[in-house]
Image (cartoon, rainbow, N blue to C red):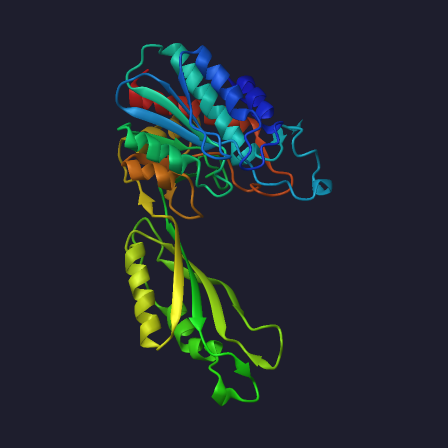
Length: 377
């Protein structure tokens, strides 16, 4: 199993699939799965390629979800090995996407193959949902596929996302949820004028100071047993013409909230509007909701994953909801139980990104064992 996973991972890494370009990665996977009787459906949207592959037609539907796209490599001269060479040195596989997430994609595919070979008439349905835009806009990938499936009444019951969740040792962390992400682009109006004649102008920076203090100090919630408290951070502030003698006519403030299940995006929007009104500000605001929070409570999927890790990796995982967002936020909208389990995340998006070949082999066994735990051997 190990060599099969490593060979596929190398083949995927050698394709320079900078988001949203797939560069033939999904075709390679589809050809393998089709030989084992998987139905293959292509769901392209704009410049994004999506693959929906299934083996079986009954419930429950167990999906592996992942992405073939990777982030740019940056300065190639800083890499120890060419970023798309998929070089192996001392059992470490190097290359852009090795950890995020072509390594776990390979483990998923091989795990599904091995399970189907051993159980050709298995109960339920095994599916793979693979996109090429997770690292970019994340608009025409998993989000659009989920919308398409829901529109035609298809469902996913359990989903494992192969994002690199592990911290110090393979399987030490399983993500069973993620915080929501909400961005506000706020424009506060003033009256432009000469700094020597402030009585003829209205400085939006000065007028906003009390509001900004209140916004950053507001306690949204206390969090809960699964999530830390909601956090707000100002990401950008801009004002002025570049001249030192002009009072600006407008102040732009961009802020982002990573929020837990104790609040909603509507509650946040309402509170921000209340604060702006309290401080007498003239404004307009544009909101961008990247994703709502989701949480998978202990149940069949978490039990299956935990037992698989205990058996194949000899580790008891810790449940965690930290970090950024993932495509799991879209799949959770289907009512699916969603967890994230993948290799170590220490080198993701970095120069010399790499993953342990041994870990990928174990990961494949964990994925296959999870299928057995849910569908039977």
